[in-house]
Amino acid sequence: MKDILRIIIAPLVWLVTFTLVYGLHGVLCGHDLTTLMIGKIPVARVLLIAAYVFAALVQLALLAALHAPRLASRYSFVRFVSRATGWVGLGATLWTLFPVVTTSSCGLAM
Image (cartoon, rainbow, N blue to C red; front, top):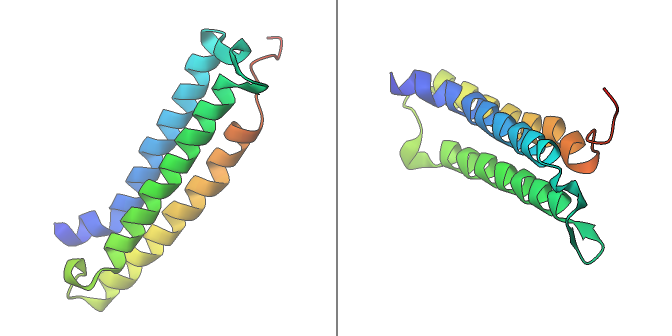
């Protein structure tokens, strides 16, 4: 069971962070919090960037844990696949959340 968890943990963490960041974006747009400013920077942008950085750091910490010798599986196949899914989870986090942080669809007419 631990080996299966090692293999699927990175995509699951990506799923959670993806959902949280998109949910945060929806809350910020839904409550019209995009107009609040810190100097010349919107608070919504600061919160989204912070969520993006947090998601990336969580994936990096997970990847480091998957590479730690004391937490590694005794099976070389499981070690390889879990580390590969860790890298995929990090890449997916950086790739899929970047557009949410850098662009906004709040002002679009429905």
